[in-house]
Image 1 (cartoon, rainbow, N blue to C red):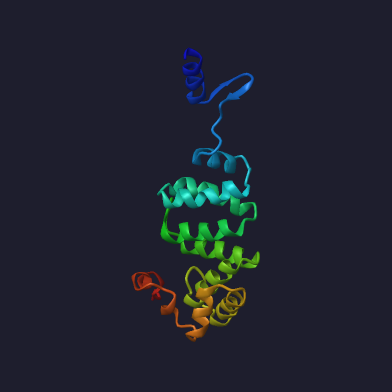
Image 2: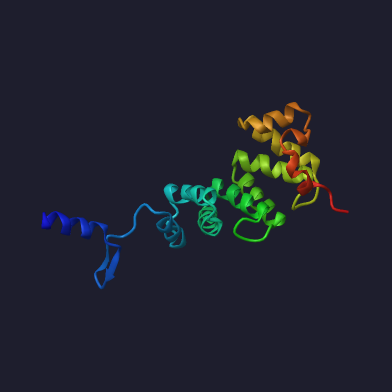
Length: 175
């Protein structure tokens, strides 16, 4: 009984570090995922954990994780960085940075990045308005199977088809 209790205490003990390393390190926590990203360990599990961080409201940690993953070439992390920048999660709202992340994802061949950057160009959001380039990217995303892009093409590129009414203020032209 004493052995079992001692074993349970040792297993439940927080990580301890000494000159030989860390005993009982965190392995599957979001804090560990942020630490992994900061140390350049940008594997799929680490990068995907940014989604949980964002959805739980920990936008600063999500931003740190997604930025490291995006810099390592994960295009899904680039589109999440765009989302964080566009909505001011974990930092100030920055349409220019949002558009830059979408551009990087699009140029890396990501269909969601193509769709998002196409929308940016069509709206002139974070970049100059370029309907032709924007539609071309939306067409590529549609051909790659992005349903929202297909719906936008089918509507004759009516942006209201893919933009909730609540967001119209964000994309209104500034004079």
